[in-house]
Length: 329
Image 1: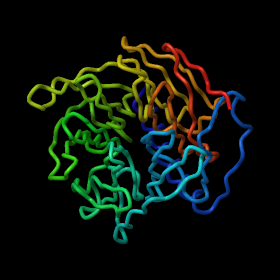
Image 2 (image 1 turned 30 degrees about the vertical axis):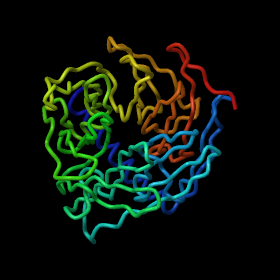
Image 3 (image 1 turned 45 degrees about the vertical axis):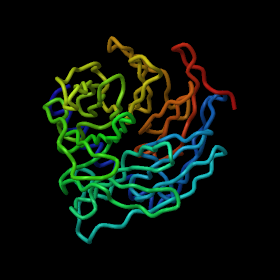
Image 4 (image 1 turned 180 degrees about the vertical axis):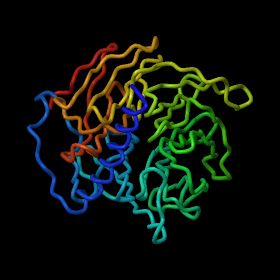
């Protein structure tokens, strides 16, 4: 892809996100023809209420927690598909501009065993941008401030160390923060994490002794080893050719993963050798998939419908012996 083509693509992406925000406020959701009959939806969400899921974390029992990116909300989706808003983050001061995306942006979310939620908020202001926490029954609280010019996007929890890892899409940095809260540490920064016009480091997971990070602009999946001292080891590129990759998750104990290809309405199965194939498309119900979470042999895929402007949803699909089988309704 030439530089001119890439700039054209990223410009269109930025324009589409802005347009999506406008439609969220003023437009009505448009029904689609529907997915293939054997796909199961956990939820169909209300676009007119700003319910465009950006990131997803699972709870025991089949429910999920999501961030609604541009309505500044954290919500719980019950196993029967109902969405309940748990918190709305404060608006930034007038005139604030969020890096890259302009509007306030609620990104990655993770859940600890006690039900505490951690999530990311970017506003272009130093008083609100950072890592936030929501305890059951409590109010949202910022526990770590990030720079005003950052765009914290993906969030991962290392359950062994109690550390949170933040993928910064604007600055090309992986930040590290204790779950108790503190000043963030610049854990990893490298050219491989930088954007080339729109968004760089995006999704992030802790898996098999490393932080794995996707880069949306470069279409790559990176592996950054966690050394015995907790520092970042040399970055390895583990997959390429996945332009517009958003979030991802692993299918099991190995290094096979599923990747959400946002703009193309696809989910790719990426093998340990870096090769990949498309396993889900719009025909299965995808509407600009933004994030993935796998539990118990089922992959939950959140679609924000940022560019299709139709039917934001959460889809559930079974994984069996490394192959896909769509759940029956």
